[in-house]
Amino acid sequence: MDYHTKDAEIIIAIQQALARAEKLHPDFAHGIYHALGFLDEEHGEVAREITKSKPGWERRMQNALIDLIVVAWRMLRGEHQTHMQ
Image (tube, rainbow, N blue to C red):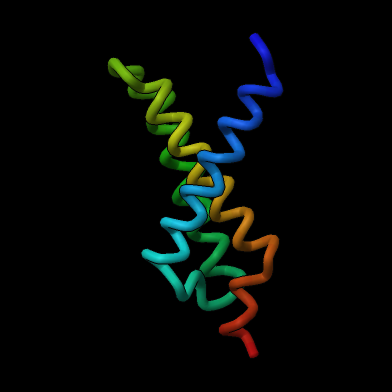
């Protein structure tokens, strides 16, 4: 497997998911604990997909991981702080 090709695909998927999330939820979170709750929700989604093990679970798990990364990314950017001022 060419990991560089896979990396490029993952980065594109994250960029697309980030753009969708920003459009759907322009007001990301109202403080750090609100953002942390979103992160926890996404982590739960990943765990649920793994434990379900229904057909297609790997793809759904990957999508959930991308969503988890998007939430973490928005936290890293400090989007939750805009509502703390």
